[in-house]
Image (cartoon, rainbow, N blue to C red; front, side, top):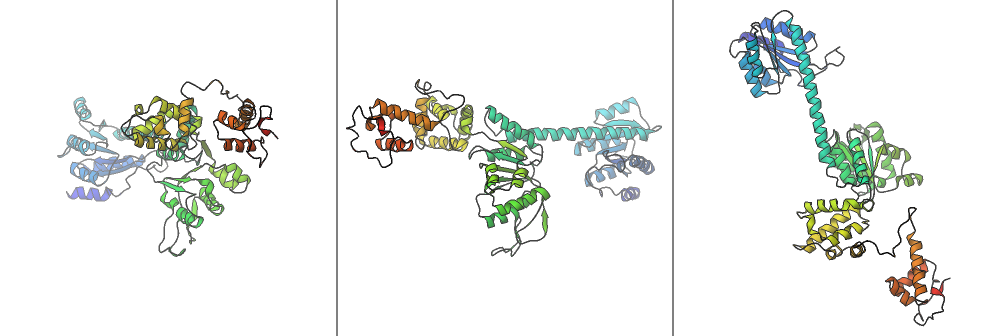
Length: 508
């Protein structure tokens, strides 16, 4: 036992770092932390010295019991043990290591090498078998180099599997198969694996929050914090403290030091939503964080260093804001490293059935609960509030319908426009509805022409023209005035008495 204690004292088992390190002067080759076990202490020491000369981190002990104690104190990348030792011998140590530390490979060495011994060792889980003859230290070095390559390959595969799983978890939450949706998802997939700053652009309710979370989950920072800040939700003094923190006594009520959201996001991702609402004074400070990775807390002087990936989002026209000097051009360029435009729902109506199914399933219902006419109404509507509006509409309809199927009436309770969409989408658009030409058309011009047609058919009688257009007479007068078809202040008296030969609508 005295020898065992002496050997452990000399090798300082368990006193070194837990992670493998590059060997000095080896061009970056991975160091293997190996435990050499032999009941002949001189042999154990010589083997460890030979492996250290090869750049490995080798420790040695004299026997199986000290080896188990050393392994219990700290992990090793490999164990090299003599086969013939006082109990526990090499095979017993192999079985114990396999049971307690299955990821640690064991290499057996013996002066009594033969095929039968090698077969027994390998069938019991040994990583390799080396005979103690000739330059067997060189053979041990080759074995360790192979084990190091295998470990690196396993680590790479594990990282790859983790990345694929993260991508699947993050981006699988995005529903839709329209070309514009697929393009946005593919861009998110590519940028997620990097630390590049991302700018998500799109209308309110188009899914910017969802994409930002998916990018974080699919990144190598997924295990780090996810921090969201709405830049338009707080006044400037509070927003600065929220983002960058404050020191004790920085302002009234600052009774203690408070870290900011950037510090909370260290090692992870910070999502700056509504970045277009960021006050000009804070834009300067954000620019410093992006460029230098440092900032100062409110009321402080000491710089704080932070490592946080930035994902920003806006529904504003930042280029126009730059021209109007409402947004710093240099900050825009720093944020616009990798822009992703998220399409509005009206640009991808083909995604509506899948979105409906997703929302219904999340609320414990089946998409079959929706009547065909109701689905047609959803597909025909323009959805100015995008996916968020669709979700809220379906949630209300589920409450109203109860156990019954969801019909158009349930949908149009808070969205009367949906009833018209269902009728128009029943058997295609009526033949008198013009097709939109490739270059587009003006709704204002179309409305003006329809009013003129109605006035002509009604022989100038505005009450009849209003009925032809499905409008009240007052609404018709208002729209005529907007299109220059009625003089401002022109009265409505005598409308019914207007004759067939009157000029249509009193066109100015």
